Length: 205
Length: 205
DNA sequence: TAGATTGTTAATCGATTAACAATC
DNA sequence: TAGATTGTTAATCGATTAACAATC
Picture 1: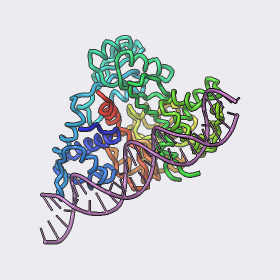
Picture 2: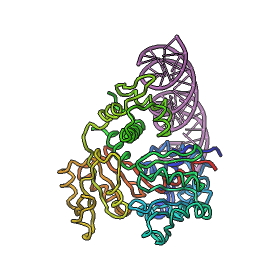
Picture 3: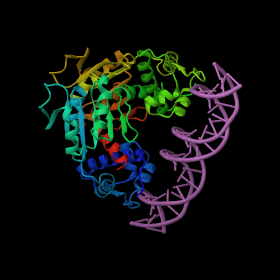
Picture 4: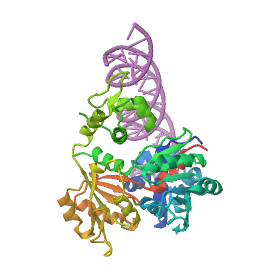
């Protein structure tokens, strides 16, 4: 099957999350119209997205929630668990460590790194905090897939360089600053302030 | 001037953040090529975005950093300060309260709300925590522009309803669940797990 | 003047929506 | 059968990129 663009992938993950909720409520069937009401996306778009997969819907009836979830996951989440490592266990880092995602079983934070002697050696939510120097070794041993930057922006580039050196090729950057990395490395920036402001500037009045 | 789509607004905010950094380093001129290297966006796109505004660049020379910043801000940030209120002062809420944005002076968190008696009355980073019941009153008095949801997902819908009731029309939802709101209310969802997974699924190998 | 860079117009690309046939 | 809903094809819309003229 052809590779899907990121936009669609993100929506499909939202469908999976929604289906999990429905399954938990013992709802066995759902129509694209109902998914549309829950997610706020148009029903046509939802059907179009779903039709990228081996189709599982029945006209007049809708989709079996469990089947649809299984079908969507089979394509997207072949690798069983995505391994994350976190750099920086400050306020935001600790919150990320404790983030209660629906997809917990699909994503696992396997190690955290910090420079503070107070923090190193501790465990938060079962995740051990290591000194930064051990990152290359641990990243390899854990087969980490994604590195998260939650350090002060002054150390952001330095940490990014170190992550690349350690073999990471995917970075989520929570610091409000740009980082420069080799082109093979994928970066996703999450600057809360920009998110807040863009919502404000975008909406009318 | 015509209303810009959100995508462009978000990039323009990134240019402003980048320009602030350059100005702090006493760089007075910058070309679209250089902005491209810093931000990772194409130089053509950057020029196109900038050309939506009264143009300020000089061929062969580039843009004056201070002028460009002023021009971009003049359009986007007419209202001097965007007021945020936060619902839920747990791990993530506390981190958001302390988030060190570049645009600090453009965005102000004016009040936080929580149900816990332990937290109510305290101040974090200068922001007072109030009981949830006082939200309608305080939201009106502070002219809050955006409400942030950082409560456990079980209470997410309930809190969203209360925000709408209090007069908020823009919501940023950090909980990993969908909320349903009247169509006049704008919602931006930030589910970390979905962000992590979509980066993983999207990138090759 | 020559070369670099901006700003704009046209072409391409991709994503969304509209229309409708298929089918349960 | 009639009606609702899926899945698909075609049309529209918007965003990006290519090409190039303008200009410092």
